[in-house]
Image (cartoon, rainbow, N blue to C red):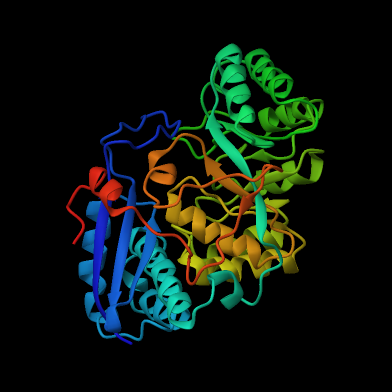
Length: 375
């Protein structure tokens, strides 16, 4: 079964805010779907956290490498693309684009074999997983109201991030966290994401240590991206001294980039993004490395419904991956699938058990958010 075409569909018109200092607009393109078409009428869908123009340029560069390749061999084809594009920029738009191709090829392999991707990854440890609602921070009162609304929909785990946190005062940071804990109650999981990968992040190790001590009082499950993404030595010190688990890694790509961080003991929780790090093939290897270093593997998932589906299958294939990220209120997650996501009575999200990724796009909905008409 051979690959004969790959199409990129940039999602635009409803792009959610990212919390960045140079804030995203609804019309900005940062999430791109790819449709991989193969022989015998098979198509697979992938997702990429990259501008659609960059994805199309990357596809043009790699077309001689993927056209005619075996669509039933995702890991080998993806590694071929990585190996032959090393000199063009490992870790940038090419790597991101390979991520989407890889996800789509796993989708095709699952369809062709009649198996869910999680089973093809070695077996399903679970049929459902707890999603944590991920939302941007705000001033304490509106944030608390937003959290109460989400909790009313059945979520029992929450991550608050970015916004004014770490950018105004320690007193405001604590008021935000206190309001969030009061809103979700003592039994809910609550995570805090400082957003240290924002442009010109102003805080360093001493701020992170002081803030981690404050978060301990509110039973925060993890402290995410408290430092700039290249501050490896500071992450190691923080992780050793903080009583709150330290999480990070969403900006790293390919397994090689994760090695020094895992070997140094920089994270309690590692968070590669399947739509950037190299796809399902690469993320599985990162997850295995994390296991060997005693680090929890919980995917970063600020992306799309297809990225969420990939995360769900990865969660099914790892015994300790008991959470997935769920962007609250993004049409690119909730509005582009034919069968909407639904929490069960326990606040858990069923992992699709159909062939491949097990989700179907609503192509009319996709067309409403597309920068080009889907072919």
